[in-house]
Length: 376
Image (cartoon, rainbow, N blue to C red; front, side, top):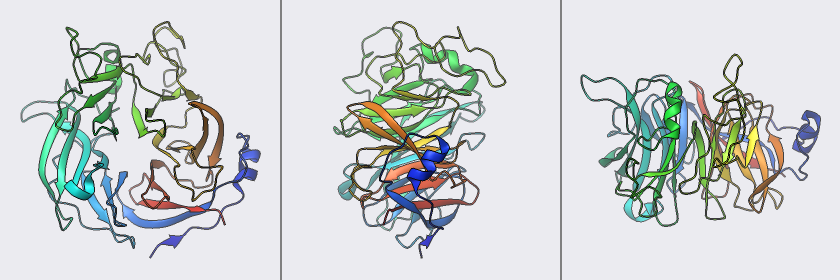
């Protein structure tokens, strides 16, 4: 049984009281709890029949029934390096899931026996007919090199209209300088065919010393990505103590980390050259200082939340514990509203379901799957 949380105050009034940009006609009156008891859930995907697939960072993938019942862990999930920020992370269903039952997921992959370190990997598999296990699991990409770090795995997947897969990869913390070189996958967005081979439109296919999977570089830790209504890839990434960014990663472009940033070292102090701009490096479309620690991102495409919300970009916030609604006009962010500022939970993922409702995951040992309730 889906359980309602208490109704919330007018979001327009809350936004005004908190100093957020006023965007009238709030589209939600609160949230309903769809499921409880999820251990640090990281991503939700939709099976098209009311059921949902949820990953838990410690290494489990579960089916949540339409009535909120949480199933047993699926068999067939590869071993993950569930330490620090690592574990079983993003999952999406293939655009042709109704026919091929394919899911794509990413996780922190441990090094082989006798070796140390880990990296972000992406696999594809077929969900069994009874939805109890993953079959024909194939690792189609492994980030190079594997390094010793508990931080910044990135790991958001987006499937483009042509079926290709974008995968966002973090800078692995202390390895941040590698985000500026093209001989590795650290701090990069890569683009692959479904079989894991580099996409033919990738910008560095024929450049000596560059890895052919790379699409864009100079990223810190991308934890939100989505395919926009403008048929472009949208991402956001964590900044350090400020400088969380929204970007539109384009082929071959450099997004600056760690040379340029609006953030600073934890505890204070400039990063790199202490500058926010340099020729040849892209500026963010939007940035948050101080940091909200964004995670999860989705455009509102349905009419369920009213005309003011349609076309908005929703971003979950871990540190700030709310959902940011960004009003987007012709590729520009022109307004921002804090949605559910009283939620008090770390929002890990934000997705629009095939039913047109917006779903959230909260990051906790007793995490919840929530559904945004449209305004009355």
